[in-house]
Image (cartoon, rainbow, N blue to C red; front, side, top):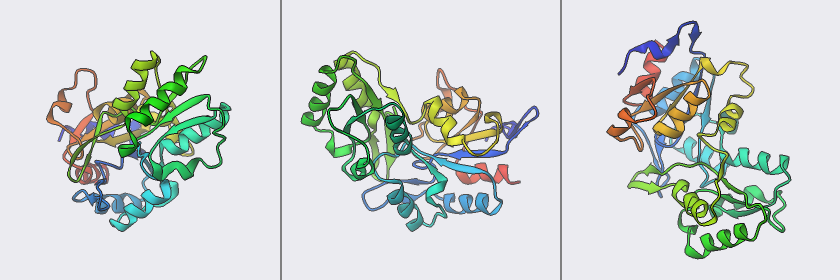
Length: 269
């Protein structure tokens, strides 16, 4: 592990954490996923120490309630208020901007939008729809965007892939790029690495961003996104991590650790 200088930068002592979920706490999968070694105990230690933290995820395959229950079944002590997700972020964004979405999202999250007006759509919201990413579904979203005077595409993240128990899976980013290319537009991202998303995740802590640290397995969205907002960013060698991430041409993590447990050992020493 790199020097523990990432714990304190000048007078900016570490006071709070943002933790990614998938790839840091657990790897998802069809059977409910699997906790990463040491992560259950590491999170429990942080909670016992009353260390300010929030789970900051781009998860858009399931509702927050479903995610909480999944994590609890794996042994994690988490509650709904611990988690900030792009589902929460996009609903606030839609309401604040009087937007009526056409939804290209996972069927399991459709109920999260029942209170949002979806008539005569003036935007398209795309999430990690997995098997719902059919040609017909993408073409319908394309047609709706092309028929708008000012097409607006909102993406619940921009990740390229993520890790499940049986291997890597395509994330929302590649499918969002299809619509961007076809419609010659740029998607507005409401999940990581959006600055608006990170700032919303920090809301309520009354702690300046430079005193926060983001721990994630995505060198661009987690580490780079956090650093662009003034936070420190630590990369874990779990989840979708690849050795080449440590020599990324644009993003240099403040530290690289083997897993969450190792990071927590340093934080709570």
